[in-house]
Image (cartoon, rainbow, N blue to C red; front, side, top):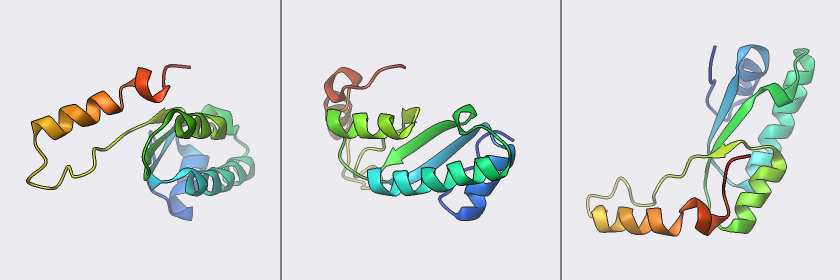
Length: 113
């Protein structure tokens, strides 16, 4: 099994038992910290090493270099950003381009580990 997704306890348990990744959707730093604490507990119970999991989060907050550092401190491997307004019919190419410029890795302090 690859990447169990979801923020439920059942999803965390699946990731801990058989996953290689876990993907948390729409979590802020505090919510991510809580879910990852639960995921660590579940991986311990499953006899696995938490560090073996790749963690991806779609943040539910504006991204700044400080926020990126907080997610990294928690053990998040990658952030998957979703532009605000993506589902708004008025969200156009210029809006998307502005989002990309504002969230470029060099701007938000992100990079590979």
